[in-house]
Length: 407
Image (cartoon, rainbow, N blue to C red; front, side):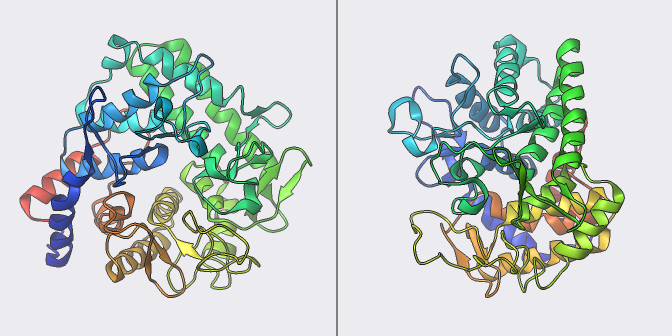
């Protein structure tokens, strides 16, 4: 590919601020975080892992993040969604909800980078991983629909979208989220691949079957044929939660929709200027929703990040990879271009306003937002670090290109 001096400058800057993300506090092993307060978050660690792979940083930081989470596992498999120094057990009270299902996907990135996963057996961590997944599909599973349920809005990571999953701290336990179940479809598949590599054949079969069954349940209960949309499902009231949220597009990433469903989802909603295709797509909420604002509603707390009329790079990245999966290359290219342009307006911000393109939240933010730099090269080179396979050369090839000056 042709060199891009501006992108090279951004990558060089990113590489320069990366050391700020390394945290080492005895007896905790060194880990990487995008947060200056030392916090280690569940899905952040996954996206940060992709970035660390591209820069060639030691995968031990990523492995240590998983070790930290698993070291705090409770008897029934529960793991808190964040590690916060200075609090009992490393858990801030507002984060005492189950970790989002990304540990297997993080470890698959480690496998792709190092070619080794046997350390999971050597350190006795595989049993903990199986128990963690069983907790998701036990404690948080609705038997009638076979869907898993968000505990609260705080657990979703979309801090103030209370209309989806209720109060921030909960317990609410009514929202079978499209995003949650998409993550679980991918997580069970990622864990099944690791199980095969480790020779854990029974676990591999169980996990693969659960991934397939969950995808079927999503198409059955979350797809709304009339609207051509994936909606969350209200378990207690047995009805859709008719909020058009960017979480619907995570289904593309998980490969859940039929080709016909995917086309409707993209044509009628993602590319619709009245909904998600705003000046700086993709906002967390459709612009057609009454609570679509760039800031906060008059009566809500501002002590969090806003996921209303704002664009977040990780959800753009998930959607972009989903578009690629369904062969929608033109839409993926446009979204990659727009995301890179948005990033350039306020580089290294935590998130951005979808109408005015202003950077918000923490700055400089050396975590997931930097994925915007890599979306265009990924498409041009045909690389996808999120692809669920036993072998994936994406991180290795991107790192080599950066060293050669071609990226």
